[in-house]
Image (cartoon, rainbow, N blue to C red):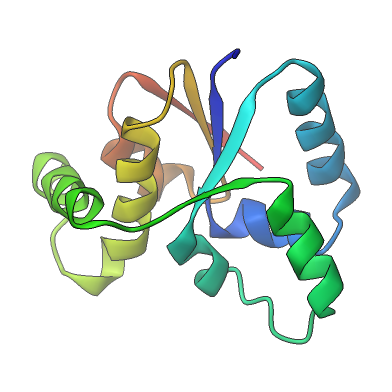
Length: 131
């Protein structure tokens, strides 16, 4: 295994909608034996409404969908406190993505459209890359 890529909701949304660039990135990840994951909460935020069920099911079958557990939630709270990002719901979903990334097999890269929001939550050991 050559590390892990974590998709935030925007990266997942692009993949669900068959964005060419995102699809090519994930195909390259598979060829390089990079594990591609997302959080279950990202599925909800990615807004798959209106998407054909078969496409949604196929796209999600290509990823590892990590559950939001009590430990994930506790780590998300720690991420928010440590980064100084308080305010409850404003950073909650990003904090869950960051918590998911922090438990993944390194090296870890988070793919996001929100560098400023996610980078402080992820910390130094996780690369945060723009989609």
